[in-house]
Length: 224
Image (cartoon, rainbow, N blue to C red):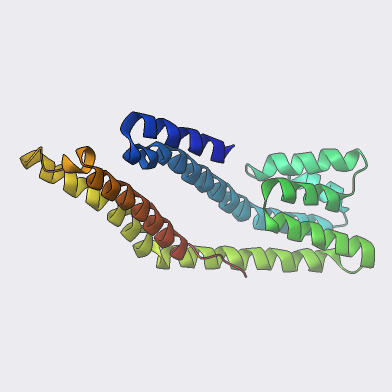
């Protein structure tokens, strides 16, 4: 779907502004995709920050003798969103007879969150091979907390890189706009001349590639 929208936007831009419109027409689609990825990343980080303390509460309920479904049901109201609605869904499905590890596995697949997958694997390991569920979940909690700490440290260390990406992307258009204030015809060849249009498209493409590269370098994947 995103590819189709990108192609349609590029074709519309080409019909409206020629070759330069191909790049300009695809910009809204690229921006929208970046926004969607940013929202998904924020949701994942929020889920990770809520999961560790909530699992710790589940462990506490297991220690006093509650079974796993009852322990999860007990902590649902104390969890924040989006985890609260997810746990409520797990409790509802468990009451209908679904295995809890399968409920977490479905959540993990839907949310594309590997922490939920780890929880599902831990519960499945206990149900198939026995052992102490409390100790298993405590290990999962410690792993999630350590990864969250590493993520915060990396975010602080790479703040300069993210700022550099923003500055490098905004500097050319601002410089062009500033020069155009004093000489309005200065940038005219970039639109009217065929070579200028080709240079404009190349500049936009290279700018987006450079921005993406800097963002990727400043956001390494954390694996605790």
